[in-house]
Every structure is written in C-alpha cells, then in structure tokens.
Length: 354
Image (cartoon, rainbow, N blue to C red; front, side, top):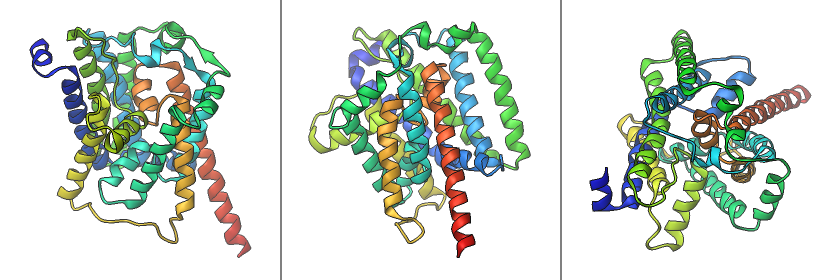
C-alpha cells in the first residue's frame, strides 16, 4: 500500500477504491433489486416478502463483515465521523422521518435512484438531480441555517456516547457473532420466501461492498502520512461533490466519494445492459412529477439533517453501530411505513367515493 501511495497519491488511490466499491455495489444492487423503499412497502402491506428479505440479507451481511474486520484487526472505526464527531439525535429523528416520507413519494432512496438512472429511468435521474441540489443547499446553501438549527436541538457528543456497542457493553467479536446469527436467519428467510439464489448472493455483496469501503479507506489511512478520513458507501454527500465537480471544478479534489458515484452508475448500467434491463422510462399519468419532486426535496434535506441516506446512515453507519445512524434508519422505516399506509388508505377512500 505504501508503494501505491507514493506512486499515485492518496487521492488517486481513494478514487480508484471508490470506483471499485461503487461498481460492485451498483451491479449487486441492480441484480438483487435491493431497495429500502420496497422493503418498507412490503412491511406496511403486511406481506414480509422477498424485498424485505433482500434488505435484511444486505444489512446483516454489512454488519457481520464490518464487525468481523474489526475483530480481526483489519479495521478500527474509532475515528469515523459517525462515532467521533458530535452527532444530532434531533437531526436523526426529524431527518430520518423526512427521508422515509420522501422515499415513498419518490419511489426510491438516493442509492436506488442512482441505480435506476443507470438503467434508463429518466424519472429517477431527474429526481436524483433535484435531491442532490437540495442536499447541497442544505449543506452550504440557503437551507443550511435551518438544518443547523434543527441539528442543535438535541446534540450528542462524539465518542462512546455515539457508540451503541459501548453503551450496551458488547464487544466487536460478540457483535460479529450476533450478526452472523441474524444473517443466517435472513438467508433462511429469503430462501423460504422463494428469493432466487442470484438475488440473495447479490444482496450479500451489497453488504460486502459497504464493508469493503470501510476496510479499504482504513488501510489507506493507516499507510498514508496525510490525514485520511475513513468512510464507506453513502450517496448524498458524494453525489453533491460529483455534481459540483462536473459543474465548476476542472480539477476536483480526488477522494472515495468521487469514484463511488460513477462506479455505481457504471456497475448498475453494465448489469442492466448485459441482462436486457436497460430501457427508457419517463413520467406518465400514473407517475406524477410533482410527487417525485416533493419526495426528492424531503430526501435531500432529510439526509443532510440525519447524517446520511438509507445506505450511508442505515448500512454504513449502522454497520459500525453508530447510535444516531440506528435512530435515523429506524425513523426512515417509521416515516416510510406510515406514509405508504396513509397513501394506501387515501386511495381506498377515493375508490369507495367513486
């Protein structure tokens, strides 16, 4: 690793790592149909079916792989921003609820929109673009003061106060063993629900991509003489960085996120082309644009407030047992299930009136 860093530099290595992790994630997410929104819809409808099983496999694969890496000494997440920095419980709750609501309205989270964009879905592409612009406005633009105000309502200091394992007194080896049991149960559940083996395997690779991001950036940080922040798969922040690089930066600063987003697009798009899944999709009468745009705005602001998207907080942050990440993904579930239930009842009432 030291030789590679001396030859190419930290930025180039991190960008290449992000590209590789992104390609794996994108292809696996496309093949497995990995989607938190679809999982919440099944739960809201009382089905508890294959899409829920896919999400469970990916989630627990990430937890197991990350905690195993920590146990083996391949990874140390003490300096990860989700644990080390000051966190916001109010942001996790409010932002998580907003993201969950927006995810239902836009028919996909940030990662799913990126994957669908690569398959020719113009609805997802436009929705993702609006999400990214709102996220940037929430980070450094006109919406930043509102986000900062909401974030400070209930702050949590960094360190053990944000480390869920430390709070409950569980070590990484025990966490890895528990995650392995949960992963085994999820695999059995998926099999009994009739999920194809290729889908189950791909879902596991979604989780492994998250672990790969953590381990890879940590190894670079350990070998580098420069300060390198460890991170993993997340989409809102990297998407804004990629957009800004495309718009106004001829020589953008290289990093993991700058390789991740194009990697996911390449991985998902290649998988779609090879399997005959690429086709153009537009807005129609049954897919009103205004609903998607409202969802994009809620997700863009909510993800920045919550500290990450459904993957960034829900899986990457969840895999290292960040307290605020678990609260955020829990609120995403609550917001999504509640919104889908209300929309379903609304459609039922409208049909009865007609």
